[in-house]
Length: 253
Length: 237
Image (cartoon, rainbow over all chains, first blue to last red; front, side):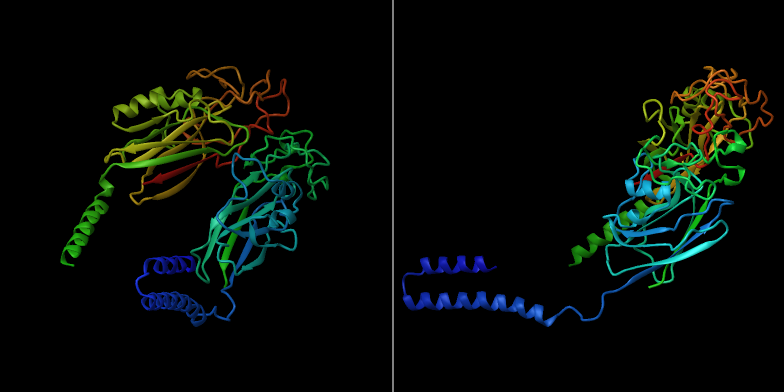
Protein backbone atom coordinates (compact mmCIF):
# COMPACT_ATOMS: atom_id res chain seq x y z
CA UNK A 1 0.00 0.00 0.00
CA UNK A 2 2.69 2.40 1.01
CA UNK A 3 5.09 1.45 -1.79
CA UNK A 4 2.31 1.78 -4.33
CA UNK A 5 1.50 5.29 -3.08
CA UNK A 6 5.14 6.32 -3.30
CA UNK A 7 5.41 4.96 -6.81
CA UNK A 8 2.41 7.02 -7.82
CA UNK A 9 3.91 10.12 -6.28
CA UNK A 10 7.20 9.62 -8.16
CA UNK A 11 5.34 9.12 -11.38
CA UNK A 12 3.31 12.27 -10.86
CA UNK A 13 6.45 14.18 -9.94
CA UNK A 14 8.22 13.18 -13.16
CA UNK A 15 5.25 13.51 -15.46
CA UNK A 16 3.92 16.89 -14.39
CA UNK A 17 6.64 19.33 -15.30
CA UNK A 18 4.49 22.00 -16.96
CA UNK A 19 3.41 23.98 -13.90
CA UNK A 20 5.05 23.81 -10.49
CA UNK A 21 1.83 24.76 -8.73
CA UNK A 22 -0.12 22.08 -10.42
CA UNK A 23 2.58 19.57 -9.59
CA UNK A 24 2.56 20.58 -5.96
CA UNK A 25 -1.21 20.29 -5.82
CA UNK A 26 -1.12 16.88 -7.38
CA UNK A 27 1.64 15.80 -5.06
CA UNK A 28 -0.23 17.08 -2.05
CA UNK A 29 -3.43 15.41 -3.21
CA UNK A 30 -1.81 12.07 -3.75
CA UNK A 31 -0.01 12.27 -0.42
CA UNK A 32 -3.26 13.15 1.23
CA UNK A 33 -4.97 10.25 -0.50
CA UNK A 34 -2.24 7.88 0.55
CA UNK A 35 -2.31 9.11 4.11
CA UNK A 36 -6.05 9.07 4.39
CA UNK A 37 -6.14 5.55 2.97
CA UNK A 38 -3.67 4.41 5.61
CA UNK A 39 -5.51 6.31 8.25
CA UNK A 40 -8.72 4.62 7.26
CA UNK A 41 -7.16 1.19 7.80
CA UNK A 42 -5.91 2.25 11.21
CA UNK A 43 -9.31 3.62 12.15
CA UNK A 44 -10.92 0.33 11.22
CA UNK A 45 -8.63 -1.54 13.58
CA UNK A 46 -9.37 0.86 16.37
CA UNK A 47 -13.11 0.83 15.76
CA UNK A 48 -13.34 -2.96 16.09
CA UNK A 49 -11.00 -4.02 18.87
CA UNK A 50 -10.72 -7.66 19.96
CA UNK A 51 -13.51 -8.23 22.47
CA UNK A 52 -12.07 -8.33 25.97
CA UNK A 53 -14.24 -11.35 26.85
CA UNK A 54 -12.57 -14.79 27.12
CA UNK A 55 -12.55 -16.94 23.96
CA UNK A 56 -15.14 -19.71 23.70
CA UNK A 57 -14.33 -22.81 25.69
CA UNK A 58 -14.97 -26.30 24.38
CA UNK A 59 -15.33 -28.91 27.11
CA UNK A 60 -16.04 -32.58 26.78
CA UNK A 61 -16.60 -35.37 29.25
CA UNK A 62 -15.29 -38.75 28.16
CA UNK A 63 -16.47 -41.94 29.82
CA UNK A 64 -14.62 -45.23 29.50
CA UNK A 65 -16.57 -48.39 30.37
CA UNK A 66 -14.73 -51.69 30.78
CA UNK A 67 -16.79 -54.43 29.12
CA UNK A 68 -14.35 -57.30 29.78
CA UNK A 69 -14.32 -60.07 32.36
CA UNK A 70 -10.80 -59.74 33.72
CA UNK A 71 -8.86 -57.16 31.77
CA UNK A 72 -8.25 -54.03 33.85
CA UNK A 73 -7.77 -50.96 31.65
CA UNK A 74 -4.93 -48.49 32.06
CA UNK A 75 -5.84 -44.82 32.66
CA UNK A 76 -7.56 -43.48 29.57
CA UNK A 77 -5.52 -41.04 27.51
CA UNK A 78 -7.64 -38.41 25.77
CA UNK A 79 -6.29 -36.01 23.14
CA UNK A 80 -7.94 -33.22 21.17
CA UNK A 81 -6.14 -32.32 17.95
CA UNK A 82 -6.54 -31.16 14.37
CA UNK A 83 -7.32 -33.59 11.55
CA UNK A 84 -4.86 -36.45 12.07
CA UNK A 85 -4.77 -40.03 13.31
CA UNK A 86 -2.57 -41.23 16.13
CA UNK A 87 -2.42 -44.76 14.72
CA UNK A 88 -3.43 -46.47 11.49
CA UNK A 89 -4.03 -50.15 10.75
CA UNK A 90 -1.10 -51.43 8.72
CA UNK A 91 1.34 -48.78 9.96
CA UNK A 92 3.91 -48.90 12.75
CA UNK A 93 3.01 -47.64 16.23
CA UNK A 94 4.64 -44.48 17.51
CA UNK A 95 6.91 -45.06 20.48
CA UNK A 96 4.37 -43.15 22.58
CA UNK A 97 1.62 -45.58 21.55
CA UNK A 98 3.98 -48.51 22.17
CA UNK A 99 4.51 -47.24 25.75
CA UNK A 100 0.75 -47.02 26.23
CA UNK A 101 0.03 -50.43 24.68
CA UNK A 102 2.87 -52.35 26.34
CA UNK A 103 2.93 -50.68 29.72
CA UNK A 104 -0.26 -48.68 30.15
CA UNK A 105 1.71 -45.43 30.43
CA UNK A 106 -0.03 -42.68 28.45
CA UNK A 107 2.34 -39.84 29.49
CA UNK A 108 4.06 -39.51 26.12
CA UNK A 109 0.90 -40.34 24.18
CA UNK A 110 -1.07 -37.39 25.52
CA UNK A 111 1.98 -35.14 25.17
CA UNK A 112 2.12 -35.86 21.42
CA UNK A 113 3.10 -32.86 19.29
CA UNK A 114 -0.32 -33.04 17.64
CA UNK A 115 -2.11 -32.59 20.97
CA UNK A 116 -3.88 -29.25 21.39
CA UNK A 117 -5.50 -30.40 24.63
CA UNK A 118 -5.32 -33.62 26.58
CA UNK A 119 -6.06 -35.36 29.83
CA UNK A 120 -5.55 -38.69 31.51
CA UNK A 121 -7.75 -40.81 33.69
CA UNK A 122 -6.49 -40.96 37.27
CA UNK A 123 -6.48 -44.68 37.69
CA UNK A 124 -7.03 -48.17 36.37
CA UNK A 125 -10.58 -48.92 35.21
CA UNK A 126 -11.55 -52.34 36.49
CA UNK A 127 -13.83 -54.78 34.67
CA UNK A 128 -17.45 -53.82 35.04
CA UNK A 129 -16.68 -50.25 36.02
CA UNK A 130 -16.58 -46.91 34.27
CA UNK A 131 -14.55 -43.75 34.66
CA UNK A 132 -15.15 -40.24 33.40
CA UNK A 133 -12.63 -37.50 32.71
CA UNK A 134 -12.97 -34.07 31.16
CA UNK A 135 -10.93 -32.30 28.55
CA UNK A 136 -11.22 -28.61 27.72
CA UNK A 137 -9.76 -26.24 25.19
CA UNK A 138 -10.20 -22.77 23.71
CA UNK A 139 -8.39 -23.82 20.55
CA UNK A 140 -10.77 -23.72 17.60
CA UNK A 141 -8.59 -26.22 15.73
CA UNK A 142 -9.04 -28.93 18.36
CA UNK A 143 -11.92 -30.52 16.49
CA UNK A 144 -10.73 -34.12 16.40
CA UNK A 145 -10.70 -36.62 19.21
CA UNK A 146 -8.52 -39.58 20.20
CA UNK A 147 -8.78 -41.87 23.22
CA UNK A 148 -6.75 -44.97 24.08
CA UNK A 149 -6.30 -47.44 26.93
CA UNK A 150 -4.33 -50.65 27.42
CA UNK A 151 -5.82 -54.02 28.31
CA UNK A 152 -3.20 -54.60 30.96
CA UNK A 153 -3.28 -58.41 31.10
CA UNK A 154 -1.84 -58.61 27.58
CA UNK A 155 1.47 -58.03 25.87
CA UNK A 156 0.48 -55.01 23.79
CA UNK A 157 -3.28 -54.83 23.37
CA UNK A 158 -5.05 -51.51 23.45
CA UNK A 159 -8.44 -50.18 22.56
CA UNK A 160 -9.78 -46.79 21.65
CA UNK A 161 -10.43 -44.62 18.65
CA UNK A 162 -8.54 -41.92 16.85
CA UNK A 163 -9.17 -38.98 14.54
CA UNK A 164 -12.88 -38.68 15.26
CA UNK A 165 -14.41 -35.44 13.98
CA UNK A 166 -16.22 -33.73 16.84
CA UNK A 167 -16.51 -30.31 15.18
CA UNK A 168 -20.27 -30.56 14.76
CA UNK A 169 -21.04 -31.50 18.37
CA UNK A 170 -23.36 -29.04 20.09
CA UNK A 171 -23.53 -28.63 23.85
CA UNK A 172 -25.10 -31.75 25.44
CA UNK A 173 -24.57 -33.79 22.27
CA UNK A 174 -23.32 -37.25 23.09
CA UNK A 175 -21.89 -40.11 21.02
CA UNK A 176 -20.92 -43.64 22.06
CA UNK A 177 -18.83 -46.37 20.50
CA UNK A 178 -18.40 -50.03 21.40
CA UNK A 179 -14.82 -50.66 20.41
CA UNK A 180 -12.68 -53.55 19.30
CA UNK A 181 -9.15 -54.29 20.53
CA UNK A 182 -6.01 -53.39 18.60
CA UNK A 183 -2.61 -55.02 18.77
CA UNK A 184 0.20 -52.45 18.69
CA UNK A 185 2.35 -54.97 16.83
CA UNK A 186 5.39 -53.98 18.88
CA UNK A 187 5.66 -57.00 21.20
CA UNK A 188 5.09 -60.64 20.34
CA UNK A 189 2.04 -62.09 22.07
CA UNK A 190 4.03 -64.64 24.04
CA UNK A 191 1.84 -64.20 27.13
CA UNK A 192 4.93 -65.44 29.00
CA UNK A 193 5.67 -64.79 32.62
CA UNK A 194 7.43 -61.47 33.04
CA UNK A 195 6.09 -59.99 29.80
CA UNK A 196 2.69 -58.72 30.95
CA UNK A 197 2.40 -55.69 33.26
CA UNK A 198 -1.11 -56.39 34.58
CA UNK A 199 -2.01 -58.21 37.81
CA UNK A 200 -2.07 -61.56 36.02
CA UNK A 201 1.71 -61.36 35.82
CA UNK A 202 3.24 -58.17 37.21
CA UNK A 203 5.88 -58.31 34.50
CA UNK A 204 7.64 -55.76 32.36
CA UNK A 205 5.64 -53.08 30.57
CA UNK A 206 7.40 -51.05 27.90
CA UNK A 207 10.38 -52.59 26.19
CA UNK A 208 11.90 -50.68 23.27
CA UNK A 209 12.65 -53.90 21.39
CA UNK A 210 10.10 -54.61 18.66
CA UNK A 211 9.82 -58.35 18.12
CA UNK A 212 6.43 -58.54 16.40
CA UNK A 213 4.97 -57.57 13.01
CA UNK A 214 5.57 -53.85 13.74
CA UNK A 215 2.23 -52.61 12.47
CA UNK A 216 -1.05 -51.90 14.19
CA UNK A 217 -3.98 -54.19 13.41
CA UNK A 218 -6.89 -55.77 15.19
CA UNK A 219 -6.03 -58.14 18.02
CA UNK A 220 -6.62 -61.85 17.62
CA UNK A 221 -7.37 -62.30 21.34
CA UNK A 222 -5.27 -63.90 24.04
CA UNK A 223 -4.83 -67.67 23.86
CA UNK A 224 -4.11 -68.48 27.55
CA UNK A 225 -2.65 -71.62 29.14
CA UNK A 226 -6.17 -73.07 29.35
CA UNK A 227 -6.61 -72.91 25.59
CA UNK A 228 -3.40 -74.32 24.28
CA UNK A 229 -0.55 -71.89 24.91
CA UNK A 230 1.41 -73.84 27.49
CA UNK A 231 3.91 -71.06 28.15
CA UNK A 232 1.17 -68.50 28.85
CA UNK A 233 0.78 -66.93 32.27
CA UNK A 234 -2.83 -66.06 31.40
CA UNK A 235 -5.86 -68.22 32.11
CA UNK A 236 -9.28 -68.61 30.51
CA UNK A 237 -10.38 -65.66 32.62
CA UNK A 238 -8.24 -63.24 30.65
CA UNK A 239 -9.74 -64.01 27.29
CA UNK A 240 -11.75 -61.23 25.70
CA UNK A 241 -13.86 -60.61 22.64
CA UNK A 242 -14.90 -57.55 20.67
CA UNK A 243 -16.15 -55.13 21.75
CA UNK A 244 -14.00 -54.76 24.88
CA UNK A 245 -14.62 -51.15 25.84
CA UNK A 246 -17.25 -48.49 25.42
CA UNK A 247 -16.38 -44.83 25.07
CA UNK A 248 -18.90 -42.01 25.35
CA UNK A 249 -18.08 -38.40 24.60
CA UNK A 250 -20.42 -35.58 25.64
CA UNK A 251 -19.86 -31.92 24.92
CA UNK A 252 -20.52 -30.08 28.15
CA UNK A 253 -19.36 -26.52 27.20
CA UNK B 1 -31.40 -9.30 -13.78
CA UNK B 2 -34.25 -11.23 -15.36
CA UNK B 3 -31.78 -13.26 -17.38
CA UNK B 4 -29.81 -14.13 -14.27
CA UNK B 5 -32.93 -15.23 -12.45
CA UNK B 6 -33.96 -17.38 -15.37
CA UNK B 7 -30.52 -18.96 -15.52
CA UNK B 8 -30.63 -19.77 -11.83
CA UNK B 9 -34.05 -21.31 -12.21
CA UNK B 10 -32.82 -23.43 -15.08
CA UNK B 11 -29.81 -24.57 -13.10
CA UNK B 12 -31.96 -25.41 -10.12
CA UNK B 13 -34.39 -27.47 -12.12
CA UNK B 14 -31.55 -29.33 -13.84
CA UNK B 15 -29.91 -30.21 -10.54
CA UNK B 16 -33.28 -31.17 -9.09
CA UNK B 17 -33.78 -33.64 -11.92
CA UNK B 18 -30.29 -35.02 -11.42
CA UNK B 19 -30.86 -35.38 -7.72
CA UNK B 20 -34.26 -37.07 -7.80
CA UNK B 21 -33.24 -39.53 -10.48
CA UNK B 22 -29.89 -40.46 -8.93
CA UNK B 23 -31.40 -43.59 -7.38
CA UNK B 24 -32.03 -45.02 -10.82
CA UNK B 25 -28.72 -43.93 -12.34
CA UNK B 26 -25.34 -45.48 -12.55
CA UNK B 27 -22.99 -44.64 -9.69
CA UNK B 28 -19.24 -44.51 -9.31
CA UNK B 29 -17.98 -46.29 -6.21
CA UNK B 30 -14.48 -45.89 -4.81
CA UNK B 31 -13.83 -48.87 -2.59
CA UNK B 32 -11.04 -49.68 -0.15
CA UNK B 33 -10.73 -52.99 1.64
CA UNK B 34 -8.41 -53.27 4.62
CA UNK B 35 -7.18 -56.55 6.06
CA UNK B 36 -7.48 -55.77 9.78
CA UNK B 37 -5.59 -58.85 10.97
CA UNK B 38 -1.92 -59.29 11.85
CA UNK B 39 -1.59 -62.89 10.72
CA UNK B 40 -4.10 -63.76 7.97
CA UNK B 41 -3.88 -63.28 4.21
CA UNK B 42 -6.86 -62.72 1.93
CA UNK B 43 -7.04 -64.37 -1.49
CA UNK B 44 -8.08 -62.34 -4.60
CA UNK B 45 -11.08 -60.22 -3.71
CA UNK B 46 -14.22 -60.25 -5.84
CA UNK B 47 -16.70 -57.41 -5.52
CA UNK B 48 -19.95 -57.07 -7.42
CA UNK B 49 -22.83 -54.66 -7.78
CA UNK B 50 -25.89 -56.70 -8.63
CA UNK B 51 -29.68 -56.68 -8.52
CA UNK B 52 -31.44 -56.88 -5.17
CA UNK B 53 -32.44 -60.52 -5.67
CA UNK B 54 -28.89 -61.82 -6.17
CA UNK B 55 -26.39 -63.00 -3.56
CA UNK B 56 -22.87 -64.38 -3.57
CA UNK B 57 -23.70 -66.04 -0.27
CA UNK B 58 -26.39 -66.00 2.39
CA UNK B 59 -25.99 -66.91 6.05
CA UNK B 60 -27.99 -70.03 6.93
CA UNK B 61 -28.05 -71.39 3.40
CA UNK B 62 -25.77 -73.90 1.70
CA UNK B 63 -22.84 -72.50 -0.29
CA UNK B 64 -23.04 -72.69 -4.06
CA UNK B 65 -20.31 -74.70 -5.79
CA UNK B 66 -18.86 -71.37 -6.94
CA UNK B 67 -18.70 -69.97 -3.41
CA UNK B 68 -17.19 -73.24 -2.21
CA UNK B 69 -14.39 -72.93 -4.78
CA UNK B 70 -13.68 -69.42 -3.52
CA UNK B 71 -13.85 -70.35 0.18
CA UNK B 72 -11.76 -73.53 -0.05
CA UNK B 73 -9.22 -72.50 -2.62
CA UNK B 74 -9.53 -68.79 -3.36
CA UNK B 75 -10.78 -69.43 -6.91
CA UNK B 76 -13.12 -66.59 -7.90
CA UNK B 77 -13.59 -67.59 -11.55
CA UNK B 78 -16.85 -69.43 -10.88
CA UNK B 79 -18.36 -66.53 -8.94
CA UNK B 80 -17.23 -64.11 -11.66
CA UNK B 81 -18.92 -66.27 -14.27
CA UNK B 82 -22.32 -66.48 -12.58
CA UNK B 83 -22.21 -62.77 -11.70
CA UNK B 84 -21.42 -61.88 -15.30
CA UNK B 85 -24.34 -63.99 -16.45
CA UNK B 86 -26.53 -62.06 -14.02
CA UNK B 87 -25.42 -58.73 -15.60
CA UNK B 88 -23.57 -57.68 -12.45
CA UNK B 89 -20.76 -55.12 -12.46
CA UNK B 90 -17.65 -56.88 -11.18
CA UNK B 91 -14.24 -56.03 -9.79
CA UNK B 92 -11.82 -58.96 -9.63
CA UNK B 93 -8.51 -59.23 -7.80
CA UNK B 94 -7.81 -55.52 -7.13
CA UNK B 95 -4.74 -56.33 -5.03
CA UNK B 96 -3.21 -58.37 -7.84
CA UNK B 97 -2.92 -61.44 -5.66
CA UNK B 98 -2.97 -61.84 -1.90
CA UNK B 99 -3.94 -59.00 0.43
CA UNK B 100 -1.39 -59.30 3.22
CA UNK B 101 -2.10 -58.65 6.93
CA UNK B 102 -2.66 -54.97 7.73
CA UNK B 103 -2.70 -54.03 4.04
CA UNK B 104 -5.34 -52.19 2.03
CA UNK B 105 -6.29 -52.18 -1.63
CA UNK B 106 -8.39 -49.57 -3.41
CA UNK B 107 -10.42 -49.89 -6.58
CA UNK B 108 -13.38 -48.40 -8.37
CA UNK B 109 -16.61 -49.98 -9.46
CA UNK B 110 -19.27 -48.32 -11.60
CA UNK B 111 -22.66 -49.91 -11.30
CA UNK B 112 -25.54 -49.98 -13.74
CA UNK B 113 -28.84 -48.55 -12.60
CA UNK B 114 -30.37 -51.95 -11.92
CA UNK B 115 -27.41 -53.14 -9.83
CA UNK B 116 -28.41 -51.54 -6.55
CA UNK B 117 -26.68 -53.95 -4.13
CA UNK B 118 -23.04 -54.62 -3.33
CA UNK B 119 -21.42 -57.92 -2.32
CA UNK B 120 -17.84 -58.98 -1.76
CA UNK B 121 -15.96 -62.14 -0.81
CA UNK B 122 -12.38 -63.25 -0.23
CA UNK B 123 -10.94 -66.40 1.34
CA UNK B 124 -9.05 -66.30 4.64
CA UNK B 125 -5.66 -68.02 4.59
CA UNK B 126 -4.81 -70.17 6.39
CA UNK B 127 -8.25 -71.70 6.90
CA UNK B 128 -10.14 -74.65 5.48
CA UNK B 129 -13.16 -72.78 4.15
CA UNK B 130 -13.19 -69.44 5.95
CA UNK B 131 -14.00 -66.30 4.02
CA UNK B 132 -14.66 -62.64 4.57
CA UNK B 133 -17.91 -61.45 3.11
CA UNK B 134 -20.37 -58.69 2.49
CA UNK B 135 -23.80 -59.91 1.49
CA UNK B 136 -26.02 -57.65 -0.58
CA UNK B 137 -25.47 -54.23 0.97
CA UNK B 138 -27.91 -51.71 -0.45
CA UNK B 139 -25.82 -49.02 -2.12
CA UNK B 140 -26.89 -45.66 -0.72
CA UNK B 141 -28.09 -43.07 -3.22
CA UNK B 142 -26.66 -40.26 -1.13
CA UNK B 143 -23.09 -39.27 -1.86
CA UNK B 144 -20.70 -39.86 1.00
CA UNK B 145 -18.20 -42.25 2.54
CA UNK B 146 -19.56 -45.37 4.19
CA UNK B 147 -17.58 -47.76 6.40
CA UNK B 148 -18.59 -51.38 6.81
CA UNK B 149 -16.85 -53.76 9.21
CA UNK B 150 -16.78 -57.33 7.91
CA UNK B 151 -16.81 -60.67 9.68
CA UNK B 152 -15.33 -64.04 8.81
CA UNK B 153 -17.73 -66.77 7.72
CA UNK B 154 -17.42 -70.52 7.38
CA UNK B 155 -18.73 -71.86 4.07
CA UNK B 156 -19.81 -75.06 5.80
CA UNK B 157 -18.36 -77.13 2.98
CA UNK B 158 -15.25 -78.56 4.61
CA UNK B 159 -14.24 -79.82 8.05
CA UNK B 160 -11.89 -77.43 9.84
CA UNK B 161 -9.09 -79.93 10.28
CA UNK B 162 -6.51 -77.10 10.23
CA UNK B 163 -3.94 -79.11 8.32
CA UNK B 164 -1.87 -77.22 5.77
CA UNK B 165 -1.49 -79.79 3.00
CA UNK B 166 -2.19 -77.90 -0.20
CA UNK B 167 -5.81 -79.02 -0.30
CA UNK B 168 -7.41 -76.09 -2.08
CA UNK B 169 -9.61 -77.81 -4.64
CA UNK B 170 -13.30 -78.09 -3.72
CA UNK B 171 -13.92 -81.25 -1.75
CA UNK B 172 -10.25 -81.86 -0.97
CA UNK B 173 -9.77 -81.74 2.78
CA UNK B 174 -7.06 -79.40 3.99
CA UNK B 175 -5.73 -75.86 3.86
CA UNK B 176 -4.08 -74.84 0.59
CA UNK B 177 -1.37 -72.65 2.12
CA UNK B 178 -0.22 -70.45 4.98
CA UNK B 179 1.28 -67.56 2.98
CA UNK B 180 3.02 -66.10 6.02
CA UNK B 181 5.20 -69.20 6.17
CA UNK B 182 4.30 -69.43 9.84
CA UNK B 183 2.35 -72.69 10.05
CA UNK B 184 3.44 -75.93 11.62
CA UNK B 185 3.34 -79.43 10.20
CA UNK B 186 2.46 -83.02 11.01
CA UNK B 187 -0.66 -82.13 12.95
CA UNK B 188 -3.16 -84.91 13.53
CA UNK B 189 -6.19 -82.81 12.59
CA UNK B 190 -8.52 -80.81 14.79
CA UNK B 191 -11.72 -82.42 13.45
CA UNK B 192 -12.83 -84.36 10.41
CA UNK B 193 -16.51 -83.48 10.55
CA UNK B 194 -18.48 -80.43 9.53
CA UNK B 195 -21.89 -80.85 11.08
CA UNK B 196 -23.15 -77.38 10.19
CA UNK B 197 -23.16 -77.41 6.41
CA UNK B 198 -24.84 -74.03 6.12
CA UNK B 199 -22.90 -70.78 5.86
CA UNK B 200 -22.31 -69.47 9.38
CA UNK B 201 -20.09 -67.08 11.33
CA UNK B 202 -16.72 -68.81 11.61
CA UNK B 203 -15.95 -70.01 15.10
CA UNK B 204 -12.31 -69.10 14.58
CA UNK B 205 -9.31 -71.33 14.29
CA UNK B 206 -7.97 -73.28 17.26
CA UNK B 207 -4.29 -73.70 16.40
CA UNK B 208 -1.71 -74.99 18.83
CA UNK B 209 1.73 -74.03 20.11
CA UNK B 210 3.61 -76.84 18.41
CA UNK B 211 5.37 -76.30 15.11
CA UNK B 212 5.65 -80.06 14.70
CA UNK B 213 2.68 -82.26 15.57
CA UNK B 214 -0.23 -81.38 17.80
CA UNK B 215 -3.80 -81.22 16.56
CA UNK B 216 -3.37 -78.29 14.25
CA UNK B 217 -0.81 -76.99 11.80
CA UNK B 218 -1.91 -73.46 12.67
CA UNK B 219 -0.19 -71.31 15.30
CA UNK B 220 -2.55 -70.31 18.06
CA UNK B 221 -0.70 -67.01 18.66
CA UNK B 222 -0.78 -65.97 14.98
CA UNK B 223 -3.67 -67.55 13.10
CA UNK B 224 -6.60 -66.92 15.39
CA UNK B 225 -8.83 -63.91 14.92
CA UNK B 226 -11.66 -61.95 16.45
CA UNK B 227 -14.27 -60.25 14.31
CA UNK B 228 -14.24 -57.91 12.53
CA UNK B 229 -11.42 -59.04 10.23
CA UNK B 230 -11.83 -56.53 7.41
CA UNK B 231 -13.01 -53.01 6.80
CA UNK B 232 -14.70 -51.88 3.63
CA UNK B 233 -14.84 -48.17 2.88
CA UNK B 234 -17.18 -47.18 0.07
CA UNK B 235 -17.16 -43.63 -1.27
CA UNK B 236 -20.06 -42.70 -3.49
CA UNK B 237 -19.50 -39.70 -5.72
